[in-house]
Amino acid sequence: MNEATSPVRLLVHGASGRMGQALLRLAAERDDIAIAGAVSRRVEARVVDGIPHFAATELAGVPPFDVAIDFSLPEAFDAITQACVARDAALVSGTTGLSPGQRQALDQAAGRIPVLWASNFSLGVAVLHELVERAAAALPGWDCDIVEAHHTRKLDAPSGTALTLGEVAARGGAQARYASLRAGDIVGEHTVQFTAAGERIELIHRATSRDIFARGALHAAVRLRGRPAGHYSLRDLLD
Ligand code: NAD
Image (cartoon, rainbow, N blue to C red; front, side, top):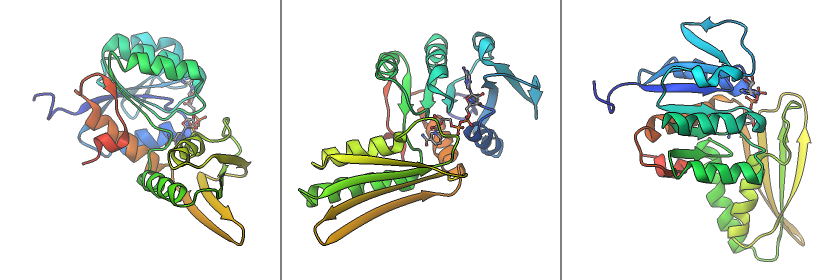
């Protein structure tokens, strides 16, 4: 079996979390992915459903992997980036709230390995980007406000998705303002609102399942394996 046909050996970083659990469940349904290991802050069982689990402190000892998918926390991000560089493996990350220094470290890693960081892995949000940029360009002088809502355990605000939407609006010439709501178990909602005297446009994306993000990340992982070092976007990896 050559690399193109053998399953991608995947390391899931942040495995015990909401996203990590969705990734493990959905990866198990695919025959183009083999889970090499799962890393969390702490481990309760060494092997779960045949998958070896490791604590963060054991990262250096995980089995060989081709790609790591990281949905963890900013404090865990440096270690997985360094591990991917050390193993010459690709990195797919959706961890939000990264510092400017961590974004720089990601740029440096992209000089050595293939890297894809995205604030949102859903197809719907990718399309929302295009709509927002067009609306911003077509509505000069209108107020642009991004309102996001997430579950109460989300640590960063505004969300990474909201900040990226703001960057997209800026490309169209609008300067966005942000408002954040933390309530209940909301998976993720983003409203980009353009307002002028007497009228308003609202572009809304509502995520009702984390599976959309997990599927996008798994799709990216399969397509990132074996590529040259560099920064990739979801768009680069779409069919
Ligand atoms: P969570 O709190 O449920 O899970 C966090 C995971 O990180 C846990 O497995 C925890 O054990 C692990 N972790 C914490 N510290 C660690 C360390 N030092 N070393 C290794 N692992 C460590 O969080 P979540 O809801 O799954 O979200 C994770 C991240 O993904 C957040 O930054 C969130 O904003 C982001 N997110 C991104 C997208 C996207 O599409 N890009 C979608 C959803 C969530």
